[in-house]
Amino acid sequence: MIRYILKKFGFMLVSLFCLVTATFVLMNAVPGSPLQSEKATSETIQKNLEAYYGLDKPLIVQYGIYLKNLVQGDLGISMKKKFQAVDKIISDSFSYSLKLGLVSVVTSVVAGCVLGIIAAMYHRKFLDNLAMIIAVIGLSIPSLVLAPLLQYVFAVKIKAFEVAGLNGPMDYVLPTIALSATSIAFIARLIRSTMIEVLNADFIKTAKAKGLAGHLIVWRHALRNSMLPVVTFLGFLMANVITGSVVIEKIFAIPGLGKFFVQSVSDRDYPLIMGITIFYAAILMVSRLLADIAYVLVDPRIRMSGGKGAK
Amino acid sequence: MLQKDSKTGAIRPEMFQPLRRDSGQGEKFQRERLTAWQDIRMRLYSNKLAMTGFWIMVVVLLFAVIAPLIYPHDHFTNDLTKTNMPPSADHWFGTDDLGRDMFERTWKGAQISLFVGFAAALIDLIIGIIYGGIMGYYGGKVDEAMNRFAEILYAIPNLLVVILLLVVMEPSLTTIIVAMSITGWINMAWIVRGQIMQLKNQEYALASKALGAGAMRIIFRHLIPNAMGPILVTMTLTVPGAIFTEAFLSFLGLGVQSPVASWGTMINDGVKSMTIYPWRLFFPAFFLSLTMFAFNVFGDGMRDAFDPKLKK
Figure 1 (cartoon, chains in turn orange, green):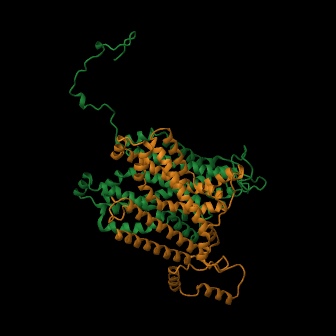
Figure 2 (cartoon, rainbow over the protein chains, first blue to last red):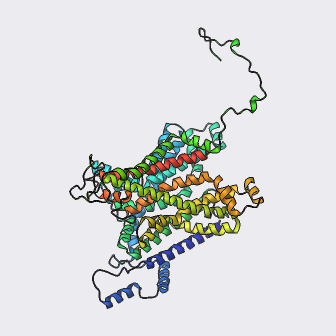
Figure 3 (cartoon, rainbow over the protein chains, first blue to last red):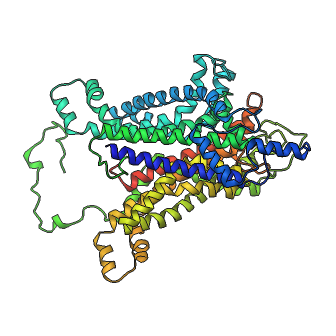
């Protein structure tokens, strides 16, 4: 077990290192310097600026410094945001993204499970078909369509919610729906298919035979066994939430990390782009690792040496 | 044969006739013989939702190809006397803030989305089959090494790679497709690997090997054709993902650039003015969702048709 986790952790570090290196190489391959501006600056100022950002040293030295700072949690200084430290920008804005993200993850799992259970319990009946059509529509409407649609209908036309911002609890409703729709649909389909299988298993028949009530069978026996694939999905769920938050934060004007990411990309603010990319990657990789570990813990059947068991 | 008595409704013994036993009867096929592919097609055709998806795909494709050819307006000419017009007989979907025709732009956007979707699926297919085929067929150390590489690449979040590349490279259609393919093929490779591993020890593959066929011939002539089902399904389900990624990137301003029309850029423009000119958001958003819906349900239908065990 420990060996399995260590192995996964090792591979995670290798992947992260590859990404950091690739990011560094790519950002340095870009023609032009971010310090160039339309205004003419004197040579001394230019030199001083380069020295300030460490751009006067050879590339390999810059890379070494970058790695060293990275390990210490220092991601450098933003080039466009008035000399703010990148880690400061990330930690300031991430709290918004984290809150929204957690609400969305919980919503996805709960709503997905409910929808999936309903579909499985009424297998091949009207409710099943309805739930699955809702799920496939949820999969097909991308967040960048759903978010403006919700905003238009519920905030602009009906005025039930604020158009933008994230101040009160009510402000979470629309962004959460837009952010969770795809994941809800995915989880609902997963739960449905495993649950149908589980409901046909012998131990469920036993439970029925001894006269256990229908809802108790579902809650006590079937759901626990159907949750397994959802655990593996959690890693992807995080990816979904992060991708989605980029769009959602832009549309609902939430000052989260996603919004800064988009801004840094359009500003070509390289230290900020690199910092946020690595931060996102680390979150995703850690959550996938946790999902892998959780999977092994929940399901003792899978082989731990296989490595690919928890795909 | 069994008819109830019209008056009393009773069933009487003389209504029954003994059926003569025919020894050949048991060997006869009662049902028409179907090949595996006919069987799959039949299951697919009888799936209404999947066929709806199929016809939506066909209609969107036809419109994307034909509409720009015969429609009188083009997608890039500005007409500042006719900005933000609602849909009318002249401009079917209205015009945008530069007076460009939205109907034409919507279908030009469809061309781009479909092109990106199909190109990404095709590249994934080619790399995936070669890489996965070799991985699955040789197994052992080769498989181990190639799998490690794939796993390391797979752990890097796809979208971050795409965004990084687009920041660095000139934003264009080719860049988007290349960037998406860097990590996109891995899923396909794993599907192919699994299939090949299952198939490579079957008699026909062993027979071919015994007759002296090389590895490449066995993989591509014998194994891949038999693994076509899951491969086709994966391909179909790759398309909506690729369409979404393109729209997402264009929405963020990293994708195709104006004056080229993409659903992503059109939605981005539409969001800004949706309170006043909602149709500018509606049309690209609607067709993007419709196309993704069509590919999703058709892909699901294909999966059920290829493997009816999955449909419960």
